[in-house]
Length: 268
Image (cartoon, rainbow, N blue to C red):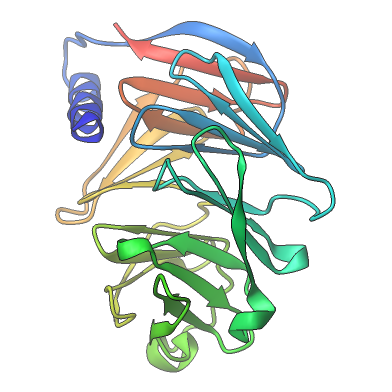
């Protein structure tokens, strides 16, 4: 419910920005001195920040709650917080998937990609019914594993299917649709069985959020919304002096990551 309310609020902001008399605007409410390379947000309103081998969890107002650090497995290359009680992190250099609880405590179970016969997998994404997807660059396909670590579905070679060579950097699932992002080619959509659906012409994106049927992404000092049904795009200005590294939306808040700061805005 919080996710739905947050999306409606965001849509209202975009609509007000497109109107002649803007009724709502973003006001900065907090600034946290921190550094990192990637932000993520769960559906409970919490925000996560990756910095090398460290993952931090903040509340909606920027209060640091928990920190996880593990140097022996190298850098954290990806985090998936679609299940806030079972956070998935990928250490791609060591071919390992690990799970954390909601306090960022390491769970005992972990997965070695070599045990799944995909030691070179570069991307992972949580999936329905406690499964997950991985993208393997050697076979150029996405493969889904169920909760018993059995390969249940795959796309086949994506280049053979689409006629396009891809080099994806981000992957996420929403409402049983998998979104595979290549900044040079766009976003490729697959259904829950790995069947290719279509290509979305959004390029030069590193990451994004999906609130079906809308994709939320940042571009410079703008937070943008793209409608997958109407192909309409709208933008919201972010009042930030520095060039943001990433901006995301979560439950009536906009979070802007710069080189040394996490800025938090609310609607007013």
